[in-house]
Image: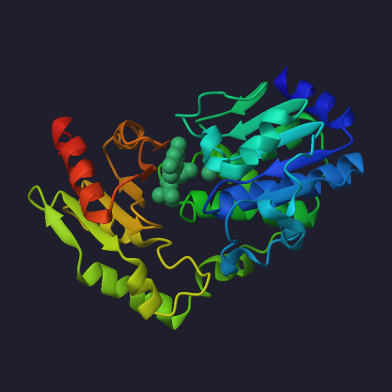
Length: 323
Ligand code: 5GP
Ligand code: MN
């Protein structure tokens, strides 16, 4: 069984690195810190953890988050016995950490994206799971690992955020059963909800209304999108908080919307698209654009200015006759 191979690899590795994906969300950080905590409690081993981009302020309350090193603070010539990627749908999603991954003696890929190409030596990828953190609760159960309150908080954050607070279609009875186990292990649901969703700054809320106000609607309002420019983020004093968190879902919440997306301007000529739907398989759109994700929540990095990226995305949707 694959979980026994995971157990074997952890037992036989001295130096372990846990890796999260670019532009980290609650699931990649929750599952990384959660696995760190589980390994500490159950194997008495410390793991290194790395992030390749800034950690959003909202997740700074996660247990062990202060131990996460930026990739630039890890010697790139280091050879780890074991590297475990968490919620990393494709190898390029961990950017500079790929060097360490490629050099490691053992590699494990724990994930739940259906587009994951099983790129590690050992792959534990379950597209039925709502979150990578849900995959980890299953692993913990199979291997009879103790789940401490700290581990439970991390894993609960992963599940809570990837299910949009248990309301997306990826929420199953198993998701709720596992969330229940985490509550039994000491998680306070209202406390974690408030920490994840009710600590937005005034600037962020005003920024999101600005973005919604200038949203564009095409294909009889079936497609809704907005562009986030760097200069606007600066105007609204963006400071490390993820100002676009939940923005695409707000456009999807309009009754007429079939596909919603947000295009964010990154550095010179690069844009990031975040796409959502209630009914259409948009993973195929984002995969065609070089990204990937889930059926109803996907994304891609596009080497184009935001306006060009919008054209490419609309072409892709129209060519596939999706709306
Ligand atoms: P988000 O829109 O929240 O950034 O991402 C939605 C989902 O699509 C997430 O599960 C995320 O991991 C995945 N995703 C986002 N961007 C990319 C990308 O560039 N490549 C791949 N393979 N998946 C992505
Ligand atoms: Mn996830």
